[in-house]
Length: 398
Image 1 (cartoon, helix red, strand yellow):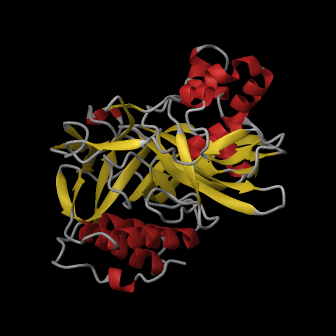
Image 2: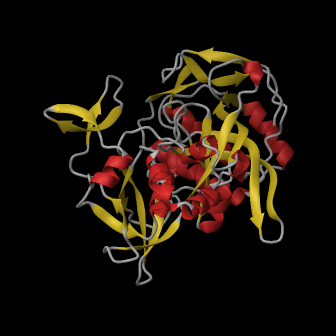
């Protein structure tokens, strides 16, 4: 991991805590802004964030560390970065330009800046699962569309809370166990799957592809959630001694449930959070900003702490799985875009990296529970008034 920087805590963040989850570096970072992926995927990822930011009012104020900045300044930061990348500088030259033109903020929960500010780095993916539009064996386990009784209450800070109305009062929505055991969403089945754990995986990932019996493939995407807190079943299996911490991944959890079917319902219902879906109008993985995710470049965070669409640099390690060598680990250091969120992304100390589509991506993403560090970049130059010119040139993102 990267040695701790000499940092100063920036306070006054208008978010979920009294202190900012961002730290501004006041000394030269001891690492290099050297990317471990090819740049061909970086450009479209940046352009996706630009499309989102350019669709917002340019003078809207966004909390960023201990300050607020207009949306236009975030867009200009991406525009300048894009021009640097398109110039194809050598790795060392790009590092110099980044340090020269950008302020660097370290992410993480408030605390002692000398402690390293480690983040939990996880991975997610877009699964491909067999399903049916009718309940026909072996397709017996439903994904649900949004039920009619799910309503939202808006709080003092404009945050929305999911619930339902009972005897004229707003109450929490049903838990996962209540929905599944008591049929609380019956009549809103969208598609049927073979395995209840497949449905659970889709709830965690937020979107996926369904291959129907006639060979057609359709996409499903997040539509709503029941408002209950996400609880990790992997952590449950470790804490109860069913799995070892180093072994707890998507494949090992699936294997444990297959070997212990009598425990499956108890384990899955430990996570009270429940996701409702809708059909997607395309097969591309989509984040909460409504734009396509880029494998290895798009990351999910708690967007009440970190500005959606922002440019960041992530440092951790990554797995690679092969039949010949098993699991091999290598350093991970790359530019990423904060383009998604999720029910498990609660608090400033987590970042979830999108791995791609299909079972290979799922196996590697399921192994990611690493420590790491995340640094957000913001252009130093004070923003001129008005929308940035990059927004008039962004056009359609390929």
